[in-house]
Image (cartoon, rainbow over all chains, first blue to last red; front, side, top):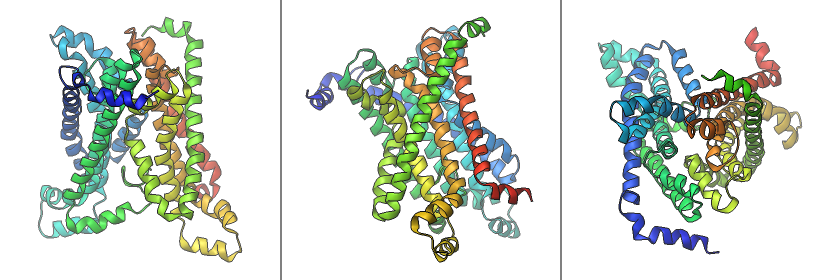
Length: 251
Length: 215
């Protein structure tokens, strides 16, 4: 049995590179399906988390959102959102993209907790002395947030966005279960039709996209870290019991 | 909500819950044993740290459906082994990192004291380092378990029975919201129960921490 030859054959088949079921189309669908909810989640959770971190109040709210978010299976959110919204979306004339919209709404809900938690942790753990120094220099609250807390908290904030991005790309794969496009289509359709080489090829495409997402956000995170913070960042990577949100240690 | 359906199908719901628990327990238990072995290996041979963490990090970054799909051509659908291989590999990054961080966080003077008392390396590990590292290790177990409870639902897509079958096969595929909600609430309940269970276990295993906390 030359299974890997069959997989290579699947990739070599030009029919798999064009049309509505072609790899470029599916990659594009996957990126839109992931990118839109990620952008919405950032727009909602980042200011909220930063504000809560700045005031250092309502920490319990953030912790609860994070814990609840972790305990709800993404497949459950996806199925429930689709079943609840399908009829409504069809009624308002969005039948063609009903699955996509309900999947994106579910994904916004999944992407908010990590971004919110890390924005909160990143801002609230900024050294008090830095904040005091800023105030002493006559900065207003908004300036303290923009000029001190955000740049210093940025590495931790970006870890949250990376976590959310990776999770969203993974969940977009599950979207195929509720009839969206994206790379999950290959896996779901090929499982139904018992086409092993396509199951494996689909898994390869999904894995490559996920790992590239992780790498891309890691690079952004390195680039966006102020040089003065690189030392602090190294400290953050040291195993510590606090395990700042999504860092090296799971806590 | 179709309460009647729930009452009529309590047996099935219980069965799916049991299967869900079993899949989770096997994954976390096997993952913990493997991670612990790897942690000891890494402590002995430091240069293995980067490759082992690197490989488990790559596995962790692959979405669950894709990891199942990689295995399906070899181990087949409807085979719990397909699910377990993937689930175990997800636990390793979480557990290994926390075991290493926990053991690495033991203060040097505590280790000195143990050495001074004439402990062998094994005695020191079991009687000093592990108890001190326990909170970080348990934190890893909590996250790994909650994560796996969620991922087990996805195994329904490769034909394995769990609460995920209620969510997808009976719920979504027949557009029967009650089953989807029962499966989802069940999975969330299991995750929360497991998380609480580990907290209670940790309190029981570290009475000194509680005493200090209560004082």
